[in-house]
Length: 95
Image (spheres, rainbow, N blue to C red):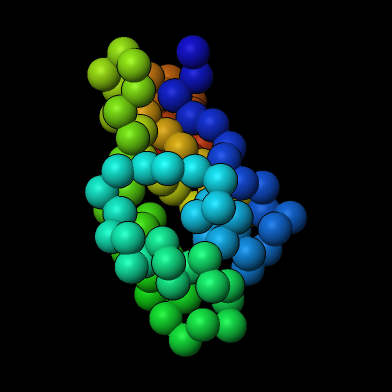
């Protein structure tokens, strides 16, 4: 099992946060932030809410692994414990 998965492709552009809010459920997210990004990029607090979501969101899978969010173009879910050294280098740069 790979320790990284694409959740939302970068072809969604500025709508990635909105797509995420509509399609995924992660823990650690303030419901107000989800409501704000659900309104779309024209909302004045859209990007601030998205930054909070990226920072705070996590999901624990059935095996007890913790997954977090990372955006660099595409939006990824990653589990550092499951990532190979190559995946870490590709996602985060030098280890």
